[in-house]
Image 1 (spheres, rainbow, N blue to C red):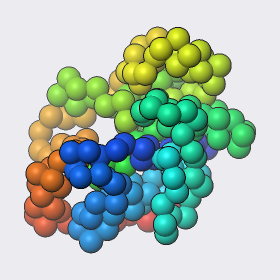
Image 2 (cartoon, rainbow, N blue to C red; image 1 turned 180 degrees about the vertical axis):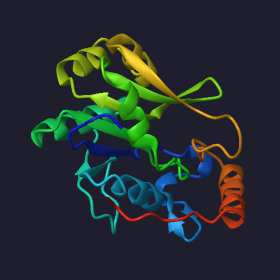
Image 3 (cartoon, one colour; image 1 turned 60 degrees about the vertical axis):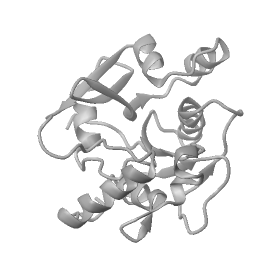
Length: 203
């Protein structure tokens, strides 16, 4: 892993979850809420963590970042996180989705390896870019301008800023599988039963 100062990990948890019947971050997987799975992953990286969502969640020991404006989607979570990181004197943030319970433990180091010389690094698997598994250099003016001019795509902002990718092998279970439907949740339950996770302590 390249030398990188402490970062803020932001959990994007603002999706309406309409295909899940609402309140997707509160859906139960393996006896825990999806937001709890995301928090456990974020805390393993050893730096500060914040949750970007319209309202705070009960039982979450991380700061809540309210949406900076209505209907921005995940890019609003990035903006809120960048502002919080700058308040903390940090230069980078990693943004992850709350509905991706199988994120790889080496996500941050592998993104950090490809970031030098770029302003963003996103994970890729099977040719599919994962905007909610990305490492970003804080540039609040550029991000605010992108949003003010109609930009809503994390992928588009990464391309606009200059980005790199870290590729994961296509074989085996997808570490970037996300949960959008009850069927996805059932598949994730079956995956957990077949391959119980090995929980690693925070660094």
